[in-house]
Image (cartoon, rainbow, N blue to C red):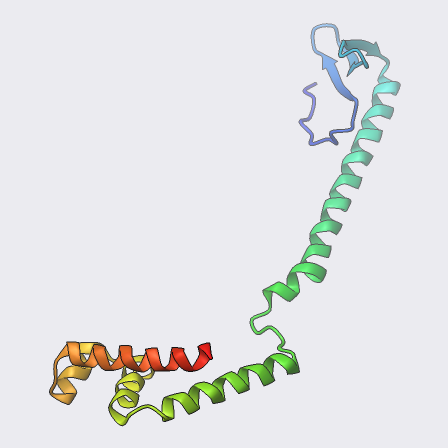
Length: 157
């Protein structure tokens, strides 16, 4: 009779066994002095221990399942949301910042504004903008850098 391999609680102080040669049941445990004892027990005692161990394992599984369930439905669902709720304060703050950025961009010279829009909003490369406007890539980059510097200065104040 082979003993089943079981996941058992770390707090379970004993291990059940069956000696094939002697045809006897055993329980093995470690005492408080770290000495391991192996004791022969009757089949009825073995069955009682086995029953307790199975109940223990069942309780461990229920507990783990409960923890996993709790994590999914209480703590992690909020984090898993695709769109997190935004507070009114956050919405107002974003609107103010957006309006400020829009105002600063609109105050830029037309060339800088146009190149900034093409580069950041139309996803054009510096080379594509330069070809379209019949100028050098360096000129386009310079315009965009100056525009970003002006925007940055407005927000530092």
